[in-house]
Length: 84
Image (cartoon, rainbow, N blue to C red; front, side, top):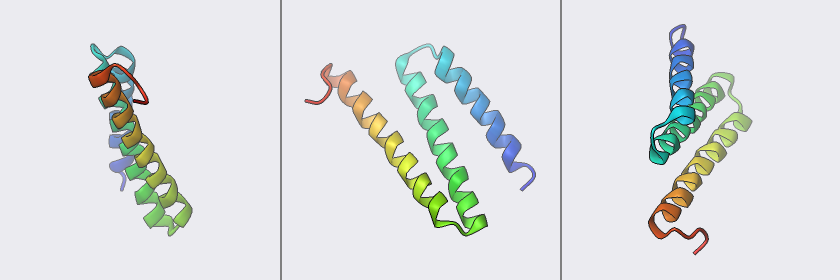
């Protein structure tokens, strides 16, 4: 358990750098997705550890928002129209 948190922090820092300075838009979107899914996974681990149903519902909601971002951006990049 001692190594998990530092690994998550290093990954989160690298994802943040990629999201800010990413060479292309898909790289930035992928970095934001990875951050969201890592936070959701960490929340799920904490939910199991603390036996909390509120954390797991937050993790599921965050993962669904990240998935919605993927669908939204993919639709925009392929059709150049959002909401169609």
